[in-house]
Image (cartoon, rainbow, N blue to C red; front, side, top):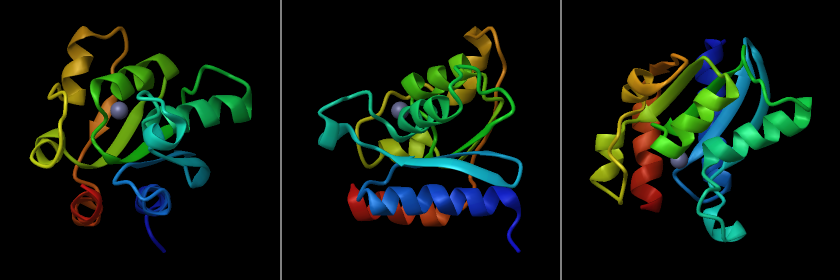
Length: 145
Ligand SMILES: [Zn+2]
């Protein structure tokens, strides 16, 4: 039996693979997985449709709330500043991610503000925990970038 965070990270990786992008996200509470999402910028013609934003939108819609405190986000790549800010606004307190922004930025354009730096400017602190299943997440990045 996998630890909950690993199985949820696998769900994020599967979402990314299914969407044929390196970017997948999942939202869970404890053992229970609620939603997964992939980056949809191309299919939706929406530059804000990153996997993390899509997962937060799905989760809010599912529970009919904007406050996602108590939930945890899992994402294949460290959230960009837009997604990291969406996490703060949502109230999600913990984010597990695979690849780091420095790793992503060697393969594609990135805004290089690290997610944990956002805590310095935010009204709410988030625990940003990187390097989870990083080899699997790097494989995704290498396959699709
Ligand atoms: Zn993003």
